[in-house]
Amino acid sequence: MGAFYGSVQVRSEDREAVRSALEKLARKGGRFLLGPSLNGWIGVYPDGGGQDFGVAKSLARKLSGEFVAVFVHDDDVFAYEYHRNKKCVD
Image (cartoon, rainbow, N blue to C red; front, side):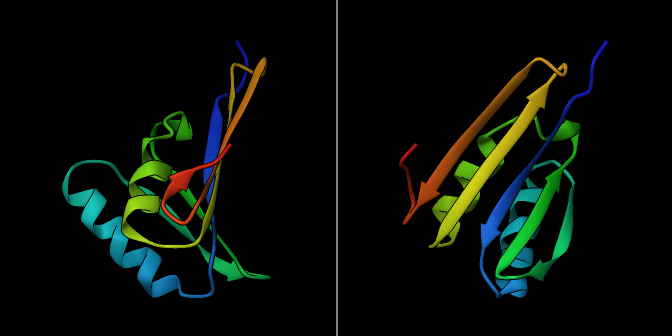
């Protein structure tokens, strides 16, 4: 059995805004690890191995900017979504 992991990368220096949005999502269920701002990007690591693009979609609705959601499924499948200005563009 392979590895399962994923994350959402948020292009922002405003870690508090990202934290606040994640707190609202956490009230509906789910847990997150929030990384520091590094070179203009903040990493969000959802529970469940980050296998759900729903976190990126929810963050994109709450915050403006750019988001890249990526995951690896069973070491075989790589998938991503790119959100900009509240829309999934790729």
